Structure formats: structure tokens, C-alpha cells
Length: 322
Ligand code: ADP
Ligand code: TRP
Image (tube, rainbow, N blue to C red; front, side, top):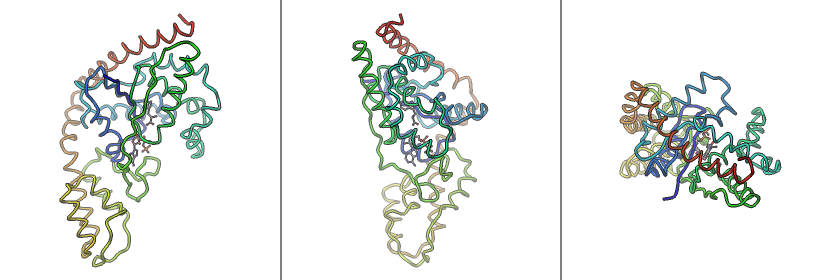
């Protein structure tokens, strides 16, 4: 059985884009706790979240959200990146031998720097920590969004050169690019992203969510005018939740004209609240039982550490540390 591994950073509340673009697809791939590893990348988040209480809060929220949304501890191991200290050890073995130029070419570093984020060594070497995350579990398949593919290539490159220098040590991982048609627009029509402040959070309070949905930007077309549904971000958001039949009906209404955006927004809010209602219920149950969450993360980390210790030792021996 190939091992599937992915990580998600706890840098804010998960939004609809994170759910449809990533989380739901990871969850669909889970199978057995020994072969499906999912972790919360708190060490990576430290490159952007610099307030301790915030980082702790986002990390706990990420665990609660993932479990509530269907990550099943009987079919996957869920753990915190920082609960597997072997990853930081392997990161050092990989850093020695990583060409500076390779990291300078990494788009995410270049982008973050361009956005004015502090360019510290953590941010610069981010892809090496990510390579350690992947290689330490002999991961075969890494499901990620398009934006992370270059980082998987770095992991493969570093694994290849380590193997070449010190003998066969690491499994070469392959990316599985998540369905990019699941790109979710934000309330302003741009890609939904924390960085743009245009998100709708998965577990937003329903009343607040309705208000935010009413603020979705629309054009100034008159109610009687017709409008092509294609490319309309309100229609796209509706399509995330509506059944085929509901979407076809709305598409026909758009083309016919004689409707107001306000009504579409109300229907969207109803559908979204209903869609996440069961997950919200599960989340409340988990919040009431924090010991259960701690136990799940502890079990996940134990399973992950067992594998990590084995691969770390293999790498240490190969390069002459043990
Ligand atoms: P953000 O852009 O809000 O900071 P992240 O970069 O932390 O989100 O993304 C985490 C995961 O969610 C990634 O796999 C990314 O591809 C996916 N994702 C983020 N925003 C969207 C979106 N609007 N549509 C689809 N997938 C998204
Ligand atoms: N960098 C990834 C992101 O921002 C998160 C991540 C960290 C990751 N380590 C990983 C993803 C290892 C896959 C495998 O989305």
C-alpha cells in the first residue's frame, strides 16, 4: 500500500477554499492509519504566525475542524508536525547539502518576500523542512494544490542527491495535484484566500455567515436583465453546495432574468449552513471532549514517530552520524 501524506498550515480559520480545494480531497483519500498520514504544520506556521496564543488557537482549531469535517482516526493518522521532533533532525541532515540557488528559485519564498513578509532563514528553508516532512515517512504520494508542486520537486531533488551521495536511503515521492477546478472564489470574486481578506469560514457562526454572504460583490445589472451564469462568482459559490438540479434551475433563472442577487445569496446561505450542519455538530461534541482530541493527536503522533525514527536512523547511518 503506498503511503499518502499531506500537511496543512494552521495560519487562520479554514475557509471554503481550503475545504473544497484541499481538505475534502485529502479526506477522500484516507484509508488506513498506517498509510494515510495528515499533519498540522505548526512549525511551518511559525514562519508567519508570531503570536503564541494565536498559533496555539489555530492549531487546536485545525485539529477540531479536520476531525469534524471527516478526518477519521480509524482510517488516517492525524498529528502535529512538532510532535515528531525527528523531522527537525532530518531537516538538518538535508539542509547540509541543499544548494542555496535551489531555494532562491522557490516561488513561494519569492512571493512571500514580494508581499513584504519578513524573509528570515525559516522562510527561506521552508521547502527543506517540507522535504523532511515528506521523506521521513517514506511517503509515496503527496496530495497538494498546484502552488505546492515545486516544493515536492525540491523534496524529490534532495532525496535524489542524498541517495546519490550516500546510497539508497529515501523513497522518491510523487505529487498528486488536487483538482484545481475546485478553485473557490472569495466574496470579492478573486481567489478566496486569507491574504485577500475575502474568505467565508467553514465554521463561521451561521448568523455572521449570512451577513458576510449578503456582502458578496455583484454587478449592477437590473433584476429584469438576463445574465450568463458562467464566470459569475456568486453562481460558482452556489454550485459548491447546490444539487445538479438546483444549479440547473438557477442557471436557467440567470439566463432568463427577472431575479435579484439578494434571493440567490439567501439560498446560498441556507445551503451552506445546511451543508456544514452535521460537521458543526461533530465539532461541538469534540470541543466538549478535548481529551478525545488529545488522544487522537497522541495516537497519530505515536504511529508517525515509529516510522520517522526508522527513516531518520537510516539517513543518519547513511551519512555517517551513527
Ligand atoms: P490561503 O490562501 O487562504 O492562505 P493556504 O495557502 O493555507 O490558504 O491553502 C491551504 C490549502 O487550501 C492549499 O492546498 C490550497 O491549494 C487550498 N486552497 C486555498 N485557497 C483555495 C481556493 N480559493 N480554492 C481552492 N483551493 C484553495
Ligand atoms: N507547505 C504546505 C502548504 O502551505 C503545507 C505543508 C508542510 C505540506 N509540509 C508539507 C504539504 C508536507 C504536503 C507535505 O500548503
